[in-house]
Amino acid sequence: MTAAMIEPPAFTKGEGKTLLVEGLSVGFGGLLALDQVSMTALQGEIVGVIGPNGAGKTTLFNIICGFVRADSGQVSYGGSSLLEHHHPHDLTKLGIARTLQGVGLFAGLTVLENVMSGAQAGLRCDIGSAFLGLWRSSREEHRVAMRARILLDDFGISAYARYLPAALPYAIQKRAALARALIAEPSLLLLDEPASGLSNVEMDDLAAMIRGLSPRMGVLLVEHHMDLVMSVCDRLIVLNFGQVIADGTPDSIRSNPEVATAYLGNEVHESSGHLQGFDDA
Image 1 (spheres, one colour):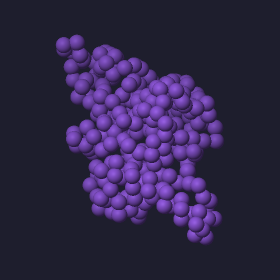
Image 2 (image 1 turned 45 degrees about the horizontal axis):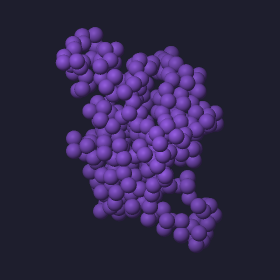
Image 3 (image 1 turned 135 degrees about the horizontal axis):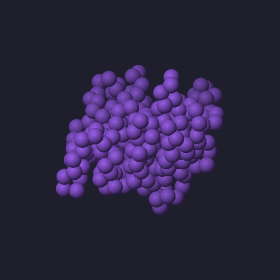
Image 4 (image 1 turned 90 degrees about the vertical axis):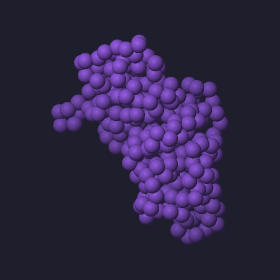
């Protein structure tokens, strides 16, 4: 799996748009899911959000994407608020794309059509042209189909372009879902547990793909596979019970006793300068 695509220009890390979260809090039925969470993610930076089950990772993603409304705090991307009049269908227009914990592919569309659907927000023709079958619509469909085929080839799944998702192995469906997110050419990509259900070899391919994306976009990654996040992320943000308990490089997080306690409980034993068992958490 490679990360080649219709590439926007590369840039220096930190240039371009920044995701900024400030004092974010949200509760559900008296349970505080996020408590004064603050963080940043720069364009060109791969940031991992980790923590035990129920720490608030997916809730954070859902607020950024407009699926959940925060009780307080601010979220902005490139200076534009993501909390005021923000809906999930606005994401691609803002330069943000997201994958889901599951693949989320449309069952009645082929793999090629699924990938093409990710380009909808950037289409250069209106619905009237499509309805009437005008040449502008046909030309745009051809352009998007060509881009989708390039992505399928880059992901090594071009042979499955005409298959329906249900007929394919889970790993192939995951690649198609990633391709669908990338066809929108986002400046920020949100990956929600992309390694779930993948073998070790497939996870190595995924890691190479994620690393290849950082010259062109920011990546915010929620993942439980610690070997993956430690190998690809520039920075890690650790959530526990809805609060940020650590923010730093993978090496600093690996040696942080508070992080190990959050994962492993109170009985933490150090071995050879590392927190024993943390690599397998």
